[in-house]
Length: 441
Image: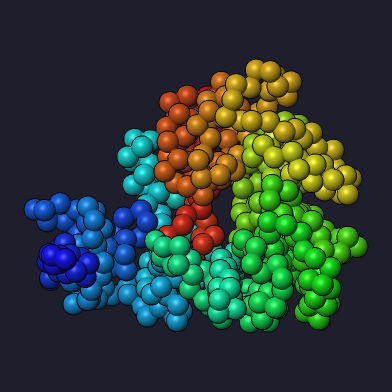
């Protein structure tokens, strides 16, 4: 057989690698917290690099770069304390001093408003802050069962990869969650259900809840082991099979609850829950301080969830109409309102569609509060503007879509009264922002 030379895969890979760029000055941080380097060859984004640093980096793909060496570190650089920081895809700003993180996030919002809303923010409130470590009350874990080796990987996804970084701790997560990692890994590896386990979510509120995402419900032997573990570690298990809502392992265990401002709310794992418990309460308090709900006010709340803002508003005497896209959360909101003796109107609706066929949409509202997901409220904000409420409080976890929607408000005759960063996600580039819009006279 003829033998033909073919270069090895390793050789081909090396041939395609671009040369390391040396002694490059980082000009800025982008909106995802990556260092921006510019030269005659274009722009590259380098994770882990900070503004004004001099670095060596390896170009990758069309726009990315991998940090190779820091030649001149920035004054704001700190040592990341997490042992998994180089691999884990979760926190990405641990190397930036905390005050600088917050300053960067405010600058990001300012830049996005200038770009997408064509507006300069004049009235910034000081950032709303709380604990920067051990704050996270939700921890979602990826898992992979190696049947041949009889070994379970349980951890967090690697940056830009599906690979799993096995962890024994997470410095931004509540210790009530992290101390479960080792015993839970041992338990799951012994269960027959381990081969069909999708992911695991840990939630710390008034109790610790453990949600197991499964393809099928467990057999009796597994249920017995889960029950014993739950009793030993004082946790509540919830089992979620394909396409269904999570179900409690023990029907007698009751619903978990969390604290909002002025009230306690029941929820079910799978419902939306802010990751930072302290700042969730502070955010509601500040938003309602700006909204100033009074007995004569008719408030429309959009993307209401299970009542995090709704119940505190109603407790202050306002007439609240709460709209949510998920029917189960509407039901939970109404249950919470009933438990507190509050009269709240709540409805399920697709806010991205025309509102004309909804009866509630034909009521006059003088104030609006909305807290959409990352996609923002592109259609809903137009419907809001058409109704001309006096005041709009917009809570956002995505400053780009906030700026896009703000442009619509500004064009409709609203002024941006105040803006504030809420540092809901310390050590990461993710940004929560609170804004107050007032209709011009």
